[in-house]
Image (cartoon, rainbow, N blue to C red):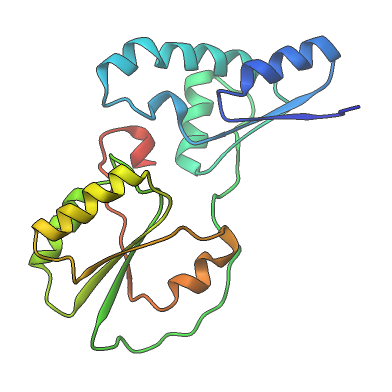
Length: 200
């Protein structure tokens, strides 16, 4: 018998709401990010999907024993738009802190992008910009990717003449991210600020 349910993201919230009503059990809602703004640059999404998400979240957050998200900006925004009496709890989406020592930058400067390899992450612009970098700067893009999109990025690096300075690595478990990032000198994340979700 389950004593407590957790709805992980807005898509799970209707299911957990139904189960909680049926069985009389409490539940929590982990919204992760700012779901009502996730694709707000897309007019069709704003008109068709956002109102659905807003109604689901409004109903769920009012009944949830707790609500959590990944940043203070999102927590404040959710509390404001839904009129929550209790501000959502912030649980960072980050691995545990690991101490590391400072080292001198070597002759070859390693730049790392680590995250989902997908459209909307400005990866095309990042790869195109490598040709403007000083020659000792090299880029590694690491993360999960759709094979066809990854092939497109590889072709972009080749056509830009920087394929020898752009590498693609497989994703790693969360517990290995910090150690795997240590050999790099610069971490790069240049997502477009076209929505509150991206800004937060």
